[in-house]
Length: 613
Image (cartoon, rainbow, N blue to C red; front, side, top):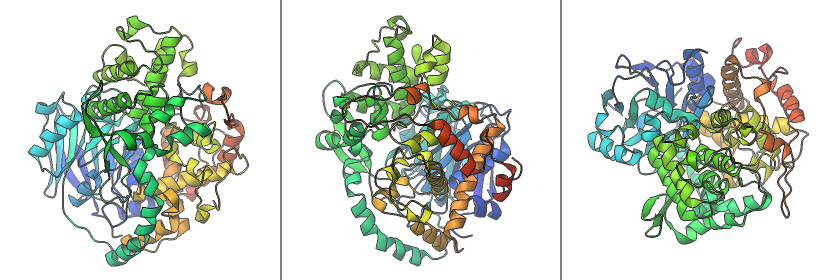
């Protein structure tokens, strides 16, 4: 198929061997790229004995056939490894420009194993790839490191670079990607995987073309749709991902006080609208994206200034702000900046600080444990102080950096009751008591509590996709048909993560599945239909599940934390309901073709070409 460079970069840091490998055409037909190819490689080349922080773990970054083309919102790649945070399938999807530079350098993906004896970085360019010394920047933050790396390589390069958190193998460390815009592969501890390999960065730059079957047809097709995309996403671009915070707080979707409070007037002080009207200095866009949802903020003075940096997105405001009840927008911006510099996942960082605040309230931890920091609700100074401690792996921050579950297990005294996580991963800022599809997706997603696994709540608010059986938005509390609804959206998201295409392209019904399938045909030169496309998504989702079941994951792990199952949020006009997870899972397993323990049946594996697992 066209649309690919057709090469995978293989790197063994232990032997310092770098080689280019032809990508198997059959694998591309089955998995497309991105999450699909990444999952296939990880499944085939790691075992149950693979230590997530050991040299045998495979760190994979894959682009897709859409990457670097005229398709808008497609400058993305997918990173995959066994997660050191959860010990199961780890993945993170990230935008910016790194993916396009990797592909223009001549590679569709890179797979790294081994461990370097001393700190190194990988320089990927059109002439090949080199393992270079990173000792001069070991110990520096992501911004400082990226500036040095660009000076050593190419000014227009993009750097996938860890900060001090990744170096110190903090389990909630991510991988900031620093180019014209800062984006992060934040979730599941992939920054710690890089740190364990002594790999400071992967720097990419290239300008090499590749063959697209019908570039003019693609350009014309996209051109016709661009005005519609611009109109449909206009408000989203203006206010960013956090523009809807006020409404999410109103309907009971915004996380508050470690997920136990119903109402909080502070949400109105940290919304995207307030950011736009006060501290926004510009919009940021991933390469070739017409939406420009990224924020750039500027604070000249006050306790958190000066700040001139990337602003927080919705998830960061939800976790660092709402979960901790911090209504000081400047403080949340400062905490967000520190997460980018240290290389920390803002979702897990905010969640674990909120968990620690509740433990402090209950007397399970004290100021003796925090070295004098008063971990009280809404304490902006405490929020910022604890981000520093987590990033540096200092004091209580060392334990907090292991995530909520491991911290709760270490604290004991029933702390696990209010550690909000699924399979070891803290949830994103969407409440499963407000959208039953999120309850089901949190329970069954491969990496843990992940809203992006289905991205279903917009389809319970206003979106529709008739091509996959969603002719109109579904009632959030509907039980009948919820399993099919959620599973179909999970399959669609896996297909998007294999193309790769940003979820936000669906906002306002801007891009539908028919557009995606047509673009895929124009790029690859092969005629695709909807069933083939959705089957790829289903295959990828089931392969991730098989990876996890091989590691012992089953029905016992497809749970929600007690707070989501037994504590209903209270407040004026709230309509939250406790999800009937047993019924939802039973329907879901049946629809998926999984047995009662949550393992894909032999028949389902054969149907999808996945062998016997």
